[in-house]
Length: 548
Image (cartoon, rainbow, N blue to C red; front, side, top):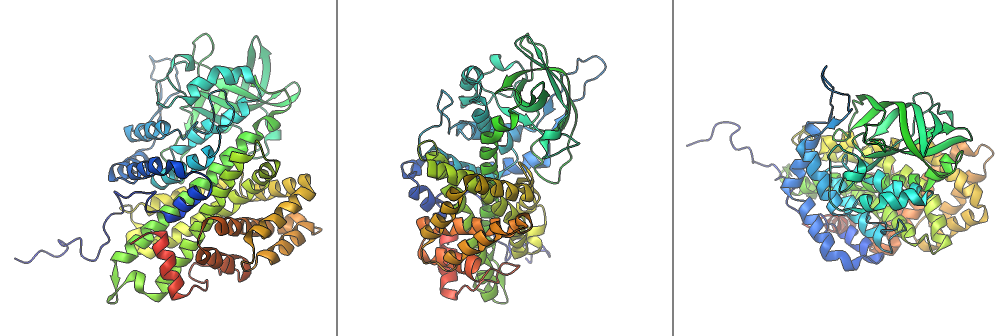
């Protein structure tokens, strides 16, 4: 009996990309972990990869985004509590990630840095989790980064660290002291200033053991957290504070959430506008030194932006290659069509360059406490990596959508969600121009040290095409009279030089050569598939990117 038209739905369609080991199927990730002393965790990382690559976890990511959080509005008989309600899938994702330590594994119990390779192995997990669902990672990255700021107030760090370091997830709405584990958020920007936090008008006045704060935040990330790092003007100037959801006497604190932002993407995560009405907070660091207090925290959140964007690129690439291997067009598998093969190989080279760059940067964070050179590298290259990787991710995901054609444009695919998600990391914690200005400031402050770093990157890149010429291009741009005007070009080249050096350390020569030739020497065209990648190299690159 003939099937009705449309009944044979599986005809020439790629099967779902699920129930895969996100670690074992990712040779570039395995090589990067091995290059930076994380090989002892291979088995644990593979278990994590199998869990997060399962159909069940991918389904949780879909559900958490299809049913976004809601601000709970009080009725006439209810005291105002200002809570946020999430789909159960979100809570499951949070529980999984906290059990894996994504929020605190880089810290020891006393709030000092955990020993190497804590940053590298945590980044590997974060990168894999980002491939499945990125929104819930926001409170986790803020929690881990907040510890760096709390170090400026050791008494607070000592009190809070046991709750921060706990590996369970406690979403209950009650005072932080009574919970088994907590998460921390942040609220820095105000409607009149945005990135320019020096224009903040929120005021803080001493009150007993803490301060009373009145004002607002235009973006308060993850309002369901148990406490928030906020910036407010004190008598000596802009100061950092830790504001709990409950006052020390157990009463609900004066955080009045006005609404949740209706965002382009990042929909599983809540972002809010908030008014502070006589809200209690503890000071973190000295009065007037708020920016200095939060700078280490900001470095960590920016690093996570780059890691997450690299993860989005990886999942988009995997979806595109997987589809191309199954889809037949003009009597040939799509992956065997020369033009498509070049596109996919070009994408694979870019994705591995992004991964290599962020994993080498994590190595610098691991070693920064004992090696001034690595600390300098982390300071200069973090904003550069965030600029380049996060800028490339949206265009990268779009190209993957086109590889799938109409199948990539419908919500049955994960790609539309990745596409909506991709821009947020380029905006959060400072947009592209802000990153470039930060690189300029860092290089200016470091002086000879900054120039030595650029030359060291070229030495690490060795004889790969364009590496030595990149130094002259970067230095020329940075010495120009109108240095800011050319900053984007210089910072992009700096990030690509650092990626080339990282690839030489962790990837086969074919990959490092292809990246350097197309990104540093010949300069890639405006679209993927314009790089000169031979058929033999393309086959090797794609097999490495996603084993067939």
